[in-house]
Length: 125
Image (cartoon, rainbow, N blue to C red; front, side, top):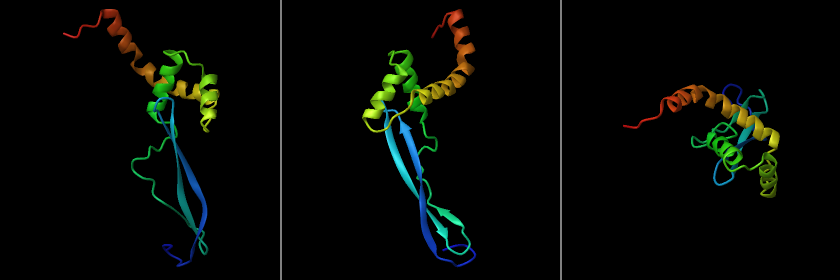
């Protein structure tokens, strides 16, 4: 029931939460989060998102695997876009590029330390 007005709740359009994780090429889960609106005060109530669901659309593991496929396995973005469209969830090559830019921003933070280790010769003793 609404907190203050005692009005009835009616269902409105749910929030659709898409969560993409990496499994082979991609594992896509779509969650419909129910929302209700009070007829008197128009307050909106939303269901809680399960704790195991990652809030970001693209899981960090997906971004990492996308980078490996692009730069280690030489899979072009347009080929991955085509494959994803075959399984019903296309990921445009422009989106893939944006994800790589986000990932590069994180990687650039540790790159100087890795470069220094490589220059000095890494010794695990």
